[in-house]
Length: 507
Image 1: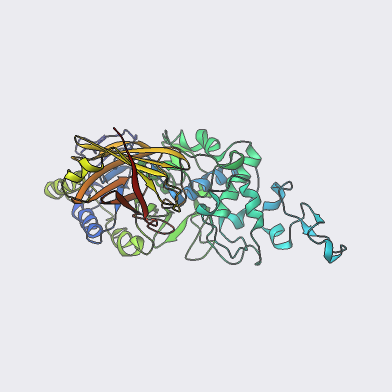
Image 2: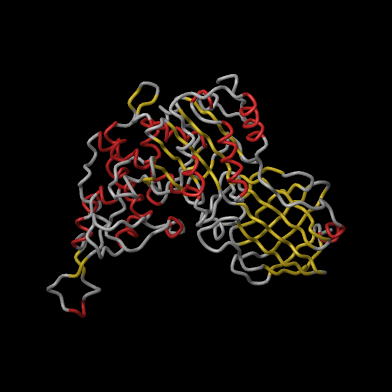
């Protein structure tokens, strides 16, 4: 590590070199201006890393996020899946123009026999015979999102399904000829992963381990498999910001890493080619003088191939924020000069001070109220509600509160810091607000304040994801109303209020 580049808090050794921005032709003041403008727009970033010319030249994490944390990458995963396709093609596992249906004869839907009576249409189907458009769909059509579908399938639609997602794919109508119209759909990326598993016998996460992750020094990532042991190729990968940056650097360097060709150079060229002009390559988005991997809520890797530069970002930004056009593309590649800039110690120190002070803004208020004594230890039994919550309890003690919920999944706890945030693990149900993600355990940083003597407000930051929940608890005698909302989601941002009433008092 370059000694003139300050180490980030919670240092995680990622194996990447560090350097000063000016040494690599980038203005420190320009990077600060970028950060200031993002903050002024109230966009919630969790991390950024900027690489140029062989070194990380600027980086920062908004506390309580830090360099060592995993972060859910959502659809940025698709560009990792593309690496698997390129490697499998190079190994001769399949060809770009192989038909999707040819890999799954056992799972294809039936079509009616033209000789059958109409009355028996639904009883007598010929198994394994796809319609003409489905039969024509190729691996390249999956890569370019030109499947012939008119239905955009989000990962949240399939996550609750425990049966075959391949079978779900074959249920989607294919009204258009594949290879024509572009429609972004996670279903296409899932099938790429399924084909890799069908042809290699391994989940994509394991197939890529020795071929991509280990050579790049990417460790500790999480990519749970779905039904039948298939990695969700469209999403589901959690890794560190540095890991996402490495994906971009690998592509900026034409597939080479530390002198070794990891991805075929012709594949790196293919993923950034304009297969859908002005819009899409092979599971990578095309932009002005760049191409990018993008995940829902603001997970980005921007590759600037003409400038040997990469910008990686994790965030929690709602749809319509236009981070790319209004912010990222205004500053990058405009900040990339062709020659080193003169040293500017003051500007570099200002950049370091700015990145070292990054943190999320939390609600403020008193850490204690007399109401805490009255409600602590009591059990509130909930009225019927859509979330299946049965009972709630609060246990206030010293500078913490343990919040306990009983629902259909079991009993869940979160320790909430009153004087300062507390970090821990929780199984708290949250899928309706969390894009249908429902892991058995999530890392959470929780804090609570009193807005007034009857209103306790908790903030739960699920620090390995984009999600930050706000839980407002209003006490009125023996009655409780709980309102829960989230910063970003693909669906509703708040749940219907839960109303409950004390029926017993613990002694």
